[in-house]
Length: 272
Length: 271
Image (cartoon, rainbow over all chains, first blue to last red; front, top):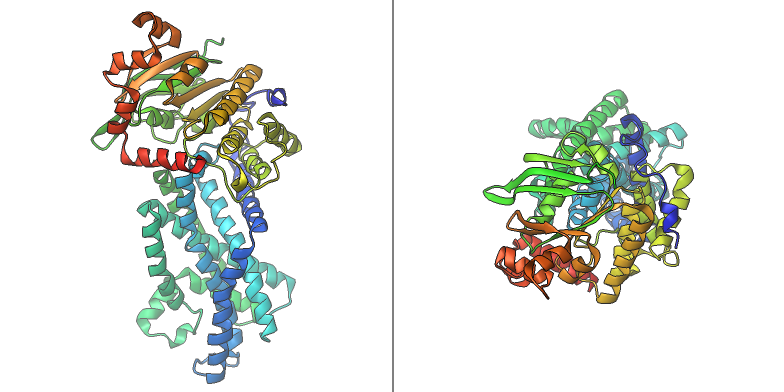
């Protein structure tokens, strides 16, 4: 027994590190925990990879032959691959709120909320953890796209940018999910709402087809949908399509900031 | 014993809609004592604990933890606390070591010390050999001890335990209390616990408060309270005298559905 070893000076500082140091520290902590969980159980990586693989292999290959969707000089499969990367991140993140409800039911969230972690840092950390899970999917889709002959970039800067965009997109959608969790408080309700909004978010974006061919009412939805900006940035960096990267990153960062504010203001409701 | 109380609550009230969960509680817990909050489900114990550990907002009255106002100095209060909730609250998909290291990071344990402190915490709870196994493989008693290791990683001045032995078999329960007693003797920390088990409170607590329907009906050392009632009286008799009810009988009628469900879920998971 080494209980004496724990008997050092207690509560050395009532304040702890400054907030600007605490927030990145918490974000990295939650990312490490997510990686540790993934390292112990990799089945989710494979099961979650099935859906994007089907989209690329069946939908992508078929529409590539049909030439039904006008994508200019870009082969449809190349056009689709960044959209499916964004979609796989969306599908991971949009149900992330279920995990926070599970943590509430298991008492883990209660304990986390009693640590010296600002609510915003807790949500930021959780949203980045969702991003880590999404990145693991991205690697699978990326490799498959290469196998299918999609002309993806090999520029390291573009690849880093791709990771950043997927992290931001997934962080936003996980914040949206945690915000809904903080409102509905129950797993079943969140499942229903998640299923209700996932496909509309996907279809009302430029993931499957260009915005230019959408009816005008759908274009409005696509313009306010952060997924469109994520896909636009991914296309710009992965296949060299024209993209407004400044606007894309700006919208995603603003969406994440808004999502963190909303989710952190509601997280205490889960613990009551 | 330091003059500054570990917990000082004055005129504390907390309502959920029309229901008064805590109704005018005055409570002082001195440093280094083991203080037990006794009462059935629905007595207000968990609500009281959730206000003092900053999970619930302070609605009326004042609460100070080691001199820190729970409303205005939340981060300082959280740094001073170690907390084990009623539910079994470890991350089953992580190893014991990873679970404790997680909380070491959240409490800003310096990187240079972290590895040793995590190992010490696990060792002190008798979990050194199981440290690299997934928590999903632990028994109920081991999970409780792992939670204690997490709660002690920041060397708290006040350890708050909400029904720490609920659902544990007698051997596991003794194991948990043995570790808590060792830690308290070594570190001098204050322990505030809630429990249904009167015999446990009599054996372990320096002082207890009997709580019923949101109010504290009696406070004192268990043997003093028993002596005041008469020769041969037990804490169960004292509780009946002050509340007109037994713990078991009150438990059936007064616990809210959510609390009863939580209790049963915890008991089920450890059982």
